[in-house]
Image (cartoon, rainbow, N blue to C red):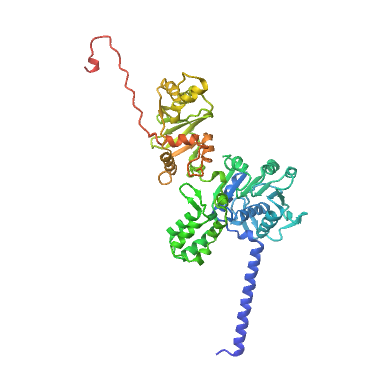
Length: 555
């Protein structure tokens, strides 16, 4: 048996070991807190951003609230200041690997040699910059690697890093001239900037091919939509429509509560559908502040206590229904409820075939005819596998005669196998309009185009008006079988791209009558029965005999 003295000695040794372990843990925790960027663990959407920003000069993130976009922006600019990604440990032979703290890290995404000045902008000095941006930067930046200088508002607006790099923090309330007066290598706009400020900083980045990162909930500055998000520019990477459920921690926390309450995966999926959508098929956001989702949980017997613990439900309840599209779905209000939400620029937007459309592919032209704006004409081809392509568009002010001529000209110049053209049904009813405007004795547009096309053995037909079926056909073809689409659009069709991104449901849940001209053609094309058929072989021309002997004909 151990003596009392030995027992006391062992107890002291144990306490000493435990105290040392506690000090080690505290030291590790303190080091982690002081160097949190080395422990950053990006969400899935943030990893997509980290990869996308490497190859583009401008990156735009439009997202809901509360998904970590400010944390992401802070870590990106910190990596630009350090020259490497502190969260991305690699091996020594990794291309461009940077050694720091006894380890190797991937090089940063800015990729500019020499000293770097990085501009960070915000909406106001006190609330946005002083209480959000600065605390977030300090939270993640490694302690001791920088010093700061305050401005007259008491905000640490200059950050000088030990390696010679610099943060300059600016506010959108400052004079436009201040955004024109310096050269910089990187810029982070947290929340959408006024156009004048953005343009000024862009000019400062030009000489060094510097990069811009915009992270925003799109509540203001609508210029960002057309000039950046929908521009289809090759130098811009857009990460948009990021729902609040992209916050993996929030989503998991709520899923855990739902599972604890006995909900299975099907119940959980239906709960989130009811929480986020008024009509999921039409991509229409919820407007009832979470009431239907809460009633659904009650019908499943979930307790009030557990319902009240759901963070995302609580957030939806606090959001004004008018702000749901932007604060929960991360979309501009003007893009709420896109009709062709299945369209993916990366998947369906393709380059034209280098050698043109094969001459045996059937082609049809579609006309959405107008009397007081440009004509919308599109050409649709189908291959042997019945995969369809929108190969060309015309968006011009044309008379009926010019409309027919434009179609024939494109057909003959490109040797297309085109025998049919379909036109808006209303073209047959514009005679009265023509008479009122130009006098009597005029034909309707349909008849004028029909006669002109007939001279080239092309038949004009009236397109179907079954909009609902046509739209569903487009959805189906964009989705395809096993995720492989059966409809594509050539990237030369700029008007199609413009309308696809803007065609939305109206307040009554119907496809809006704006930005729908080429879209009308598209859904009507799916109702024409366009399929591949083998070309009919021409009969051989038989020689003509001048004799009465017809034996060569097999008679």
